[in-house]
Length: 139
Image (cartoon, rainbow, N blue to C red; front, top):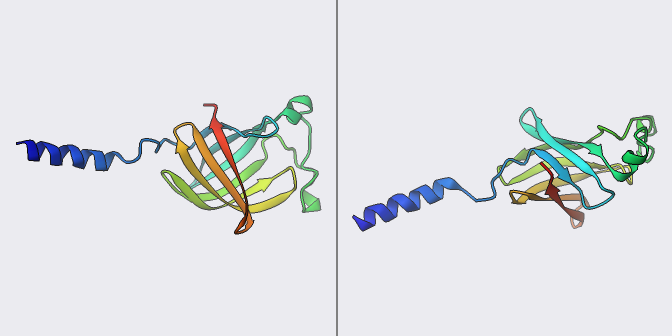
């Protein structure tokens, strides 16, 4: 009887998965400039747009002036898509790109859930030339 109960409990634990396999969609605070990014599903992938930042709170009309593509420099920063085409899950997404409006660059990226309320975003020009940030869930 004990052995049967043990096997049943072990099987349920294996099915439960990691405790931090929360849904990555939601509003996230970046560690710099008071940024807030809304991550959502875009078809079968994840994407994310800039909701606000310290600079946008001061001037909501700011444009994407540092974009490397001059034709894109007139786009508003508010609502700008910054995360594109991340696939995988439930705890790690790969194959996506990260646009950084601070330098106008686009980088290969990964998103990894650290807990229900923290994720790690990594952007790379080319490995090992990468930057990593930890974002905290706002909602």
